[in-house]
Amino acid sequence: MMTTLAFVGLGAMGDPMAAHLARHARDHGHRVLVWNRTAAKADAHAQTHGTQSVPLTEIAAADVIFTCLPTSAEVDEIMTALRDRLRPGAVWVDCTSGHPDAAARQADDLNRAGVTFLDAPVSGGTAGAQAGRLTVMVGGDPDALDRVRPHLAFAGKVVHVGGTGAGFSVKAVNNALLGVTLWATGEGLAILGRAGVNLGAALDVINASSGRSNASENLIPQRVLTREFPATFALGLLAKDAGIAVDLTQSVQGSAPVLAQVADLLRGAQRVVGDAEDHTAALKLIESMNDTVLK
Image (tube, rainbow, N blue to C red; front, top):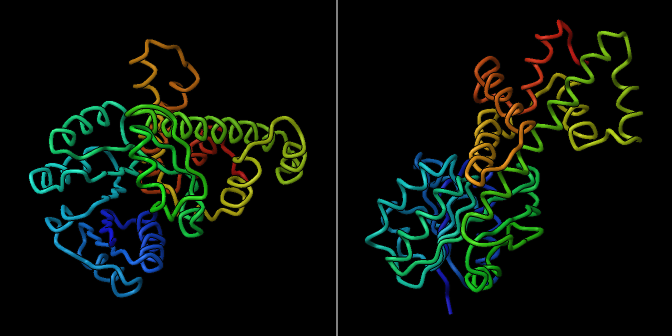
Protein backbone atom coordinates (compact mmCIF):
# COMPACT_ATOMS: atom_id res chain seq x y z
CA MET A 1 0.00 0.00 0.00
CA MET A 2 1.35 3.42 -0.97
CA THR A 3 2.27 5.68 1.93
CA THR A 4 2.33 9.44 1.51
CA LEU A 5 5.28 11.05 3.26
CA ALA A 6 5.80 14.78 3.63
CA PHE A 7 8.86 16.84 4.51
CA VAL A 8 8.67 20.46 5.68
CA GLY A 9 11.86 22.51 5.86
CA LEU A 10 14.53 22.12 3.19
CA GLY A 11 17.48 23.82 4.85
CA ALA A 12 21.06 22.56 5.08
CA MET A 13 19.88 19.48 6.98
CA GLY A 14 16.37 19.04 5.63
CA ASP A 15 17.27 19.10 1.94
CA PRO A 16 19.49 15.98 2.00
CA MET A 17 17.23 14.27 4.56
CA ALA A 18 14.26 14.66 2.22
CA ALA A 19 16.43 13.41 -0.65
CA HIS A 20 17.07 10.15 1.22
CA LEU A 21 13.37 9.94 1.93
CA ALA A 22 12.68 10.28 -1.80
CA ARG A 23 15.06 7.46 -2.70
CA HIS A 24 13.44 5.25 -0.09
CA ALA A 25 9.99 6.13 -1.44
CA ARG A 26 10.91 5.25 -5.00
CA ASP A 27 12.15 1.84 -3.86
CA HIS A 28 8.95 1.09 -1.95
CA GLY A 29 6.23 2.65 -4.08
CA HIS A 30 5.56 5.63 -1.82
CA ARG A 31 5.42 9.33 -2.63
CA VAL A 32 7.06 12.32 -0.94
CA LEU A 33 5.55 15.79 -0.70
CA VAL A 34 7.84 18.72 0.13
CA TRP A 35 7.22 22.27 1.26
CA ASN A 36 9.59 25.10 2.10
CA ARG A 37 8.92 28.71 3.04
CA THR A 38 10.95 29.65 -0.03
CA ALA A 39 8.96 27.84 -2.69
CA ALA A 40 11.84 27.82 -5.17
CA LYS A 41 13.75 25.44 -2.88
CA ALA A 42 10.88 22.97 -2.86
CA ASP A 43 10.53 23.23 -6.64
CA ALA A 44 14.25 22.61 -7.08
CA HIS A 45 14.12 19.63 -4.72
CA ALA A 46 11.25 18.14 -6.69
CA GLN A 47 13.10 18.57 -9.97
CA THR A 48 16.33 17.08 -8.61
CA HIS A 49 15.04 14.27 -6.40
CA GLY A 50 11.60 13.39 -7.75
CA THR A 51 9.62 14.68 -4.78
CA GLN A 52 6.41 16.66 -5.27
CA SER A 53 6.41 20.35 -4.37
CA VAL A 54 2.99 21.29 -2.97
CA PRO A 55 1.23 24.15 -1.17
CA LEU A 56 1.45 23.88 2.60
CA THR A 57 -2.18 22.85 2.98
CA GLU A 58 -1.59 19.70 0.89
CA ILE A 59 1.04 18.50 3.38
CA ALA A 60 -1.88 17.64 5.66
CA ALA A 61 -2.78 14.69 3.41
CA ALA A 62 0.37 12.78 4.40
CA ASP A 63 0.46 9.65 6.53
CA VAL A 64 3.81 10.72 8.01
CA ILE A 65 4.86 14.38 8.28
CA PHE A 66 8.50 15.27 8.92
CA THR A 67 9.45 18.77 10.02
CA CYS A 68 13.00 20.10 10.26
CA LEU A 69 12.88 23.77 11.19
CA PRO A 70 15.05 26.19 13.19
CA THR A 71 12.98 26.24 16.40
CA SER A 72 9.75 24.98 17.93
CA ALA A 73 8.15 28.36 17.17
CA GLU A 74 8.30 27.68 13.43
CA VAL A 75 6.85 24.21 14.00
CA ASP A 76 3.98 25.81 15.94
CA GLU A 77 3.20 27.97 12.90
CA ILE A 78 3.04 24.94 10.61
CA MET A 79 0.90 22.98 13.06
CA THR A 80 -1.53 25.87 13.38
CA ALA A 81 -1.89 26.06 9.61
CA LEU A 82 -2.47 22.31 9.22
CA ARG A 83 -4.17 21.17 12.43
CA ASP A 84 -7.76 21.16 11.13
CA ARG A 85 -6.78 19.34 7.91
CA LEU A 86 -4.62 16.52 9.28
CA ARG A 87 -5.46 12.88 8.69
CA PRO A 88 -6.42 10.97 11.85
CA GLY A 89 -3.89 8.20 12.39
CA ALA A 90 -1.02 10.19 10.91
CA VAL A 91 2.33 10.54 12.70
CA TRP A 92 4.16 13.87 12.96
CA VAL A 93 7.93 13.39 13.29
CA ASP A 94 9.64 16.61 14.34
CA CYS A 95 13.37 16.55 13.57
CA THR A 96 13.77 20.14 14.78
CA SER A 97 16.09 20.74 17.72
CA GLY A 98 13.07 21.84 19.66
CA HIS A 99 12.15 22.61 23.25
CA PRO A 100 10.89 19.83 25.57
CA ASP A 101 8.12 22.09 26.87
CA ALA A 102 6.91 22.67 23.32
CA ALA A 103 6.90 18.93 22.64
CA ALA A 104 4.41 18.25 25.42
CA ARG A 105 2.08 20.99 24.21
CA GLN A 106 2.39 20.02 20.54
CA ALA A 107 1.75 16.36 21.32
CA ASP A 108 -1.44 17.28 23.20
CA ASP A 109 -2.66 19.53 20.38
CA LEU A 110 -2.06 16.87 17.72
CA ASN A 111 -3.57 14.13 19.85
CA ARG A 112 -6.89 15.99 19.76
CA ALA A 113 -6.72 15.71 15.95
CA GLY A 114 -5.96 12.00 16.15
CA VAL A 115 -2.31 12.50 15.19
CA THR A 116 0.69 11.15 17.11
CA PHE A 117 3.70 13.40 17.72
CA LEU A 118 7.29 12.19 17.97
CA ASP A 119 10.12 14.54 18.86
CA ALA A 120 13.00 13.16 16.81
CA PRO A 121 15.92 15.58 16.56
CA VAL A 122 18.99 14.47 14.67
CA SER A 123 22.75 14.64 15.19
CA GLY A 124 25.54 14.25 12.69
CA GLY A 125 25.66 17.59 10.90
CA THR A 126 25.34 18.24 7.21
CA ALA A 127 27.85 15.51 6.40
CA GLY A 128 25.73 12.97 8.26
CA ALA A 129 22.58 14.21 6.54
CA GLN A 130 24.16 13.92 3.11
CA ALA A 131 25.44 10.42 3.85
CA GLY A 132 22.17 9.27 5.40
CA ARG A 133 23.96 8.41 8.62
CA LEU A 134 22.29 10.69 11.14
CA THR A 135 21.64 9.66 14.72
CA VAL A 136 17.96 10.15 15.59
CA MET A 137 16.97 10.44 19.25
CA VAL A 138 13.23 9.87 19.60
CA GLY A 139 10.80 10.80 22.34
CA GLY A 140 7.19 9.64 22.38
CA ASP A 141 5.11 6.53 21.77
CA PRO A 142 7.40 3.58 20.91
CA ASP A 143 4.63 1.96 18.85
CA ALA A 144 4.42 5.08 16.68
CA LEU A 145 8.18 4.95 16.26
CA ASP A 146 7.92 1.35 15.09
CA ARG A 147 5.42 2.48 12.46
CA VAL A 148 7.65 5.19 11.04
CA ARG A 149 11.03 3.54 11.58
CA PRO A 150 11.10 2.02 8.07
CA HIS A 151 10.81 5.53 6.64
CA LEU A 152 13.78 7.00 8.55
CA ALA A 153 15.94 6.64 5.46
CA PHE A 154 18.26 9.46 6.58
CA ALA A 155 19.27 7.64 9.78
CA GLY A 156 22.27 5.52 10.60
CA LYS A 157 21.13 5.02 14.21
CA VAL A 158 17.71 5.43 15.79
CA VAL A 159 17.33 5.39 19.59
CA HIS A 160 14.09 5.69 21.55
CA VAL A 161 15.14 7.75 24.56
CA GLY A 162 11.89 8.11 26.49
CA GLY A 163 8.52 9.84 26.55
CA THR A 164 7.44 12.99 24.78
CA GLY A 165 10.13 15.67 25.02
CA ALA A 166 12.95 13.23 25.80
CA GLY A 167 14.35 13.49 22.28
CA PHE A 168 14.55 17.27 22.49
CA SER A 169 16.08 17.01 25.97
CA VAL A 170 18.84 14.65 24.85
CA LYS A 171 19.59 16.81 21.81
CA ALA A 172 19.86 19.96 23.92
CA VAL A 173 22.23 18.37 26.43
CA ASN A 174 24.25 16.75 23.65
CA ASN A 175 24.76 20.10 21.94
CA ALA A 176 25.50 21.82 25.23
CA LEU A 177 28.27 19.26 25.73
CA LEU A 178 29.51 20.09 22.23
CA GLY A 179 29.66 23.70 23.34
CA VAL A 180 31.52 22.80 26.52
CA THR A 181 34.22 20.76 24.79
CA LEU A 182 34.58 23.26 21.95
CA TRP A 183 34.88 26.22 24.30
CA ALA A 184 37.18 24.53 26.84
CA THR A 185 39.50 23.23 24.12
CA GLY A 186 39.60 26.67 22.54
CA GLU A 187 40.56 28.24 25.86
CA GLY A 188 43.31 25.67 26.42
CA LEU A 189 44.76 26.19 22.96
CA ALA A 190 44.63 29.97 23.31
CA ILE A 191 46.72 29.74 26.49
CA LEU A 192 49.17 27.36 24.79
CA GLY A 193 49.41 29.71 21.83
CA ARG A 194 50.26 32.63 24.08
CA ALA A 195 52.93 30.43 25.66
CA GLY A 196 54.53 29.92 22.26
CA VAL A 197 53.48 26.29 21.79
CA ASN A 198 52.84 24.96 18.28
CA LEU A 199 49.12 24.28 18.31
CA GLY A 200 49.20 21.51 15.73
CA ALA A 201 51.75 19.66 17.83
CA ALA A 202 49.73 20.33 20.97
CA LEU A 203 46.65 18.80 19.35
CA ASP A 204 48.68 15.74 18.34
CA VAL A 205 49.39 15.20 22.03
CA ILE A 206 45.88 16.03 23.23
CA ASN A 207 44.30 13.70 20.69
CA ALA A 208 46.45 10.83 21.91
CA SER A 209 45.67 11.67 25.52
CA SER A 210 42.82 12.17 27.94
CA GLY A 211 41.89 15.68 26.73
CA ARG A 212 40.70 14.55 23.32
CA SER A 213 37.18 15.18 22.03
CA ASN A 214 35.41 15.70 18.73
CA ALA A 215 36.34 19.35 19.04
CA SER A 216 40.07 18.59 19.34
CA GLU A 217 40.11 15.72 16.84
CA ASN A 218 37.94 17.20 14.09
CA LEU A 219 36.35 20.60 14.55
CA ILE A 220 39.34 22.68 15.57
CA PRO A 221 41.95 21.14 13.23
CA GLN A 222 39.61 21.16 10.22
CA ARG A 223 37.79 24.45 10.74
CA VAL A 224 39.61 26.72 13.18
CA LEU A 225 43.34 26.19 12.57
CA THR A 226 42.65 26.30 8.83
CA ARG A 227 40.67 29.54 9.34
CA GLU A 228 37.92 28.12 7.10
CA PHE A 229 34.96 28.11 9.52
CA PRO A 230 32.66 26.48 6.91
CA ALA A 231 29.00 27.34 7.45
CA THR A 232 27.45 24.03 8.52
CA PHE A 233 25.80 24.38 11.95
CA ALA A 234 25.11 27.98 12.88
CA LEU A 235 26.49 29.47 16.09
CA GLY A 236 23.05 30.90 16.85
CA LEU A 237 21.53 27.43 16.79
CA LEU A 238 24.20 26.03 19.12
CA ALA A 239 23.58 28.91 21.52
CA LYS A 240 19.85 28.21 21.32
CA ASP A 241 20.33 24.51 22.11
CA ALA A 242 22.63 25.26 25.04
CA GLY A 243 19.96 27.64 26.33
CA ILE A 244 17.38 24.85 26.13
CA ALA A 245 19.69 22.68 28.24
CA VAL A 246 19.74 25.47 30.85
CA ASP A 247 15.93 25.66 30.75
CA LEU A 248 15.80 21.90 31.26
CA THR A 249 18.13 22.17 34.25
CA GLN A 250 15.82 24.70 35.86
CA SER A 251 12.68 22.69 35.09
CA VAL A 252 14.04 19.62 36.90
CA GLN A 253 15.53 21.79 39.68
CA GLY A 254 18.98 20.50 38.85
CA SER A 255 22.42 22.05 39.11
CA ALA A 256 24.62 22.39 36.02
CA PRO A 257 26.77 25.50 36.47
CA VAL A 258 29.26 24.56 33.74
CA LEU A 259 26.51 24.13 31.15
CA ALA A 260 24.97 27.44 32.23
CA GLN A 261 28.29 29.28 32.00
CA VAL A 262 29.06 27.93 28.55
CA ALA A 263 25.52 28.76 27.39
CA ASP A 264 26.14 32.37 28.43
CA LEU A 265 29.51 32.41 26.66
CA LEU A 266 28.00 31.01 23.47
CA ARG A 267 25.25 33.62 23.58
CA GLY A 268 27.91 36.29 23.92
CA ALA A 269 29.90 34.83 21.05
CA GLN A 270 26.74 34.75 18.95
CA ARG A 271 26.27 38.48 19.45
CA VAL A 272 29.93 39.37 18.86
CA VAL A 273 30.86 36.95 16.08
CA GLY A 274 27.51 36.62 14.34
CA ASP A 275 24.38 34.50 14.56
CA ALA A 276 24.83 32.80 11.18
CA GLU A 277 28.56 32.04 11.49
CA ASP A 278 29.62 28.42 11.88
CA HIS A 279 29.50 27.31 15.52
CA THR A 280 33.27 26.83 15.56
CA ALA A 281 33.62 30.58 14.98
CA ALA A 282 32.65 31.00 18.65
CA LEU A 283 36.37 30.56 19.32
CA LYS A 284 37.00 33.92 17.67
CA LEU A 285 35.72 35.45 20.91
CA ILE A 286 38.31 33.44 22.85
CA GLU A 287 40.95 34.69 20.43
CA SER A 288 39.87 38.27 21.08
CA MET A 289 39.89 37.71 24.84
CA ASN A 290 43.46 36.40 24.65
CA ASP A 291 44.78 38.62 21.84
CA THR A 292 45.87 35.58 19.85
CA VAL A 293 44.85 33.60 16.79
CA LEU A 294 44.41 29.82 16.82
CA LYS A 295 46.40 28.63 13.81
